Structures are given as C-alpha cells and as structure tokens.
Length: 259
Image (cartoon, rainbow, N blue to C red):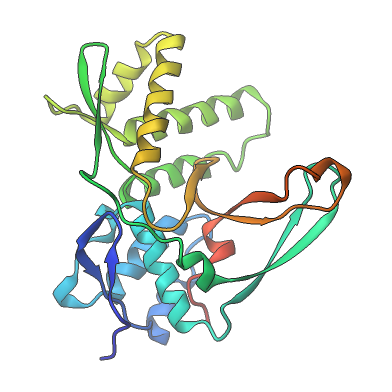
C-alpha cells in the first residue's frame, strides 16, 4: 500500500505522520457525519489512514498536529492546490477575492520548541499550560453544537458561549503537583474573582503563543482555525494597513475528501 512522504509531527518532531489515500469505502464511512462534527471526522479519518508502524491515536495529538496532517493529505491529493478566498473589507465592506496556493501556507509550518507545555505560578498553584488536544476539540465541538437551537444574544445563548470559553480554559491547563479532573478544574475556576480570571486567561494566552506550532492558527469562536495574510482593500481607510488576517474554518479551507 502506498503512503505519502512522512512529515514530522509539529508538537513532537521525533514522531512522524504517515498517511495513505482514502478508499471509497472509507469516504462513505464519514459521508453521513454532520459537518459541524469536524473534529470527530478528523479523528476517525486520521486513525484510519495512518501507517501501522507510526500509528498513534489522533485524539491525543494537538489540534495543530491534526490540522497539518489533513493539510498534508490535501496537498498530496487535490488536483489543484490553488484556492480562491473570499472576504470583505472591514472598512468599506467591499467584496474581495484572493487566489492562494496551499503550498505557500505550508511553508509557514513550524515545530514546537522545548517542552510541550509551559508552567505558570498562579494563586499558590503550579499550572501547566498545554495546547488543546483532538479530544478536547471534540468536546468543544459538542458544546458549540448546543448553540444551534439558541437565539443569538439571548440569555441562554450568552450562557452557553460563556461555558464554551470556560471549557477552552480548563482543557488547556493541568495542575502540575496533583491530579485534578475536569470537574475539579471547573470548580477551581469558578472560585476565581473576575479580575483573577482575566489575569489567568491573559497568562494562558501568552503561554499558548509560545507553544504555537504547525500551520498558523488560532482559537476563534470555540474552533481551531487557520490564518493567513491577504491583501487589504485599496480604499482610503486601509491605506496604512496593506494586509488583513483572515480566519478559516477547517472544512472551508482544507476539506476532507468526498465522493
């Protein structure tokens, strides 16, 4: 069976990612999964297509490892790596298009430097800050699904958005000197004052920046999304800002195969 050229896993370059092309049977197996369950699809897809000698559960990979793996798959299987990105100028609302070669974004792939976590001291605790895993991203995906039946800007909607934000925080931290389960982390966070929580989220954001690896990406609205720089509009308001940063939902940017 033919496998694509291996690529180092960006969170741990000592391990390689080796994938093969999906069969029609494997594409049918994921065809009926809700598009909103992107992370679940990704886990099943990557676990099916890995070479046995380098296999590990993709749910334990970082989100950026997973994103790069599927991106690598796309580069080897898409008939055309050119994609048109559509966006709107934030100043004048003009509709714009940009032709991007996926290979260019792959050139910005980076590996994680140092340990796969960073430690901070906070309220007498030593906390380990780590990138979100595939398993955590699946949980966040489920929380995001709960927003669908809710009306935006209602109390229930705002409550669910707050729960998602709280989950993002607890899924990327561990207590270094003791085992604390997910519910224990939540209860610890709920006891923080508003200013303490703001301080903690700022510290976590700084450490996650240090831990960036793989393709350029950010957590945006509860989802891990790729980012790229595109030319700004030529309107007067954008004169001093020649480029814009765009966020791209996973399936919109680098799709898993379909029939």
